[in-house]
Image (cartoon, rainbow, N blue to C red; front, side, top):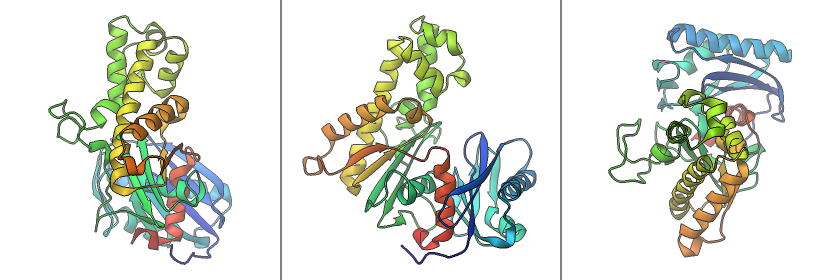
Length: 328
């Protein structure tokens, strides 16, 4: 790990999902204040950048921190990024293409800006201040709308020359399976992402096999979210429980392959599905990964739930801004 910057305050920003979150952190990376806004895919790139800047300013105001007191800003963004240029190549949730995030925010706030993949920075946050502190090699797996992956090795993010990597959601698990959002067929995301799970759950509702979920969310995929799935299982929808367990086992098999390649000592699993059903996901992932990993790796790693929740990305982004060597 590189030399720590001794600046007093940092901003971490989460650009993922349907909402954006800005946090102001002190030198010990404790969140002092945060502000959240909805993302708007229809507002255009210039307005979107303005919204990000305004959200950061609101968080600074809430924390009582001036821009000239900042050591830097860290941004965690989904989608393909150009890490050398500091641009978001494509962000479907915002309708963005080739957006100069680093340059725009650096000009507005007068400080260095670090841009990285949101799963990378969330995993880095868990490594620095969460469930993976002290580990040498950390694998992060975050099932959500897709399934993101990241690896921290000896304090540095595993990455390509200008791109993030470890797209574990696009490991092919069913040759000739259904089409994935990436354009290929049979990826892990097609069977174990929240979207895939919601689609299977909606079919169960339509067939009359999940009465509790029918009452909670109906068969509308947009309404079948993690909390509704957890409540349906608690109310006795065994078909929904089986769908979730099969998805978790698929993730466990993907983890076993990654363990064979990377030999992590800690595997972090997180995201809304895991937060809503931690016992189910941890049990199935652990059992499957231990059963399918190569014999020399049995017992060499532990699978744990992420500890920082919504703060993982903003904490990791701020920590990366303070230690840019972790990205090199």
